[in-house]
Amino acid sequence: MSGQLVNQAQLAALFGVQPITIRAWVRKGCPEEVKGGGGKRAAYNTAAVIRWREEQAALAATGDASALDEAELKKRKLAAEMGLAELELSVRRGEYVEIEQVGALVADEYATVRANFTAMPGDIAPDLEGCTAAEIQELMMAKVTEILHGLSADDLYAPEAEASEGAGGSTEAATEAESD
Image: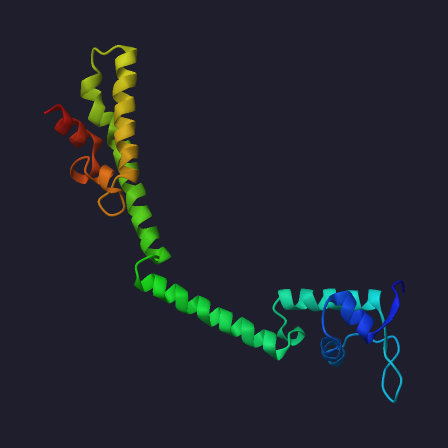
């Protein structure tokens, strides 16, 4: 196995931690090349320790709590509790909405758009008689734009400038109001 053989103080310096941290790692299974005790100093293979630390990090990242110490578990629990409390507060403030509510609104909007597109041929057919291709294209574009605008202009979520366009966010109503 490659790596250098170092003592506890050197290993601590290598990882930027205190020697007490190395002793805690040993209690958790950090490999010792030479066991310490009885007046004999422990020795560590740097490659083996690095590999062990990578394994511990992988276990911690995948949620294996056995790889974490009690202090780390307490920090994670506190962070999770704080995150949950912040989320609940944001919901109460109205900063977030439940996905079911949004899903229902989007489904309604799409159903309206689908119905409007399905009705479009009957809505514009009487206006197309005797029109040139350019006029037909203009009429169709206006109708498609009106239908699509319904997705972005509603009374619940539209910015105030858009919501004031006309009743129900209709471009037709807004256009009629402008021409009066």
